[in-house]
Image (cartoon, rainbow, N blue to C red; front, top):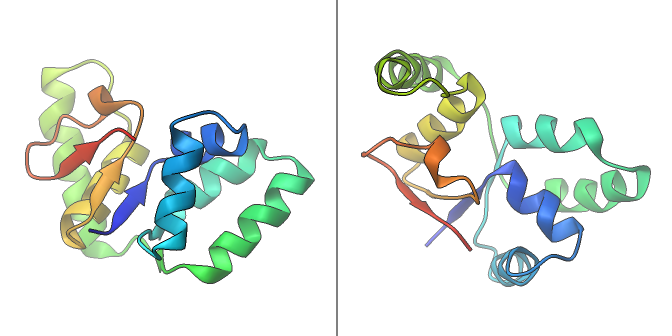
Length: 125
């Protein structure tokens, strides 16, 4: 199984919080993660220089998923559909969900409520 970690997983892991730190370490060792450009941007916004350096090594080691037209279209559909059902659905989360769908990845997050999509697999560590 290959995982697409949400930004909150990296934030908690970099703070050595469990179970995120152990989960991420195991999946990195198994080469079982891919990175979203959305997560890269979100993480770097508040990262310290030391965290940026460590995260840079992770970025170099793993495949990065771009946002292309297919991802954008699916994200827009998710946003339209779920914004009618809930007041809080963010476009960045929709991009992440769309990447998980297209690439058949399991999305890992601490905020499962942010991903009400029924056509993707969402787990917590």
